[in-house]
Image (cartoon, helix red, strand yellow):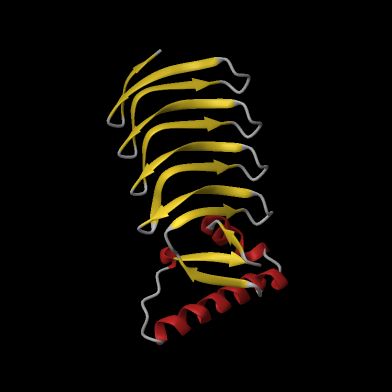
Length: 164
């Protein structure tokens, strides 16, 4: 019943905007709860579990360029980096909901580009490698959760060419 009520509220909001002649695309908006910028995927996945008091403080604001810090609903950081032309650009860091680093690397027009680092949720290093236009490219090193090397792989434009 709560999920149905939330969906109705959300549809009502969309109808208000579309009936006023505006084209409404969710990707063009950031979600704020209590003035905190919430990661959109976190919000959409967990909308049914948000209590009504917090939900009453929800505001959708047009996405703007600049440095952003997005948060999980639990108040911990989800990600931070620069938005330019409505997409990720520059260096971004992503976090697990427990606060540990999940990944870090550069984006160019919303696509991963260059070196990316990944960690396990316990904070141990997981892997490092290169992206070219959002595809694996070059050497990738993968570690086991205990820190020992698991494998080394070579990619060319997203295609695995060698494993060690």
